[in-house]
Image (cartoon, rainbow, N blue to C red; front, side):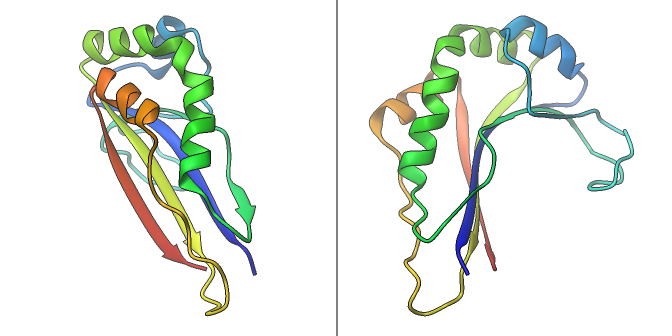
Length: 136
């Protein structure tokens, strides 16, 4: 069984319209949620969110360096607009890394780390990093 990873940028806040963030940044979110809006995954989100992901990747070898670099390639042209959105809507930005790790003892463990350009981008948009790991 292979491991799975997803790396995405999440913008979160108490009271904002995710579609307004999309309009300001000029990049459509891959997932949005509105505070208090009921859905199948989270019954009542405590905050609104705007997320951009390249999707989940299933592989024998998981490489967070590679995934975060790929995400940066897509987001870098929008850096100044993301900064503007964070300031205008009082948002907080998080680079989310979610790993579902294969428990097979012979399977490769994920390579977890970030290149300097990714860290520079996260600093520019005032983002933090959150890494969640789950057993497959």
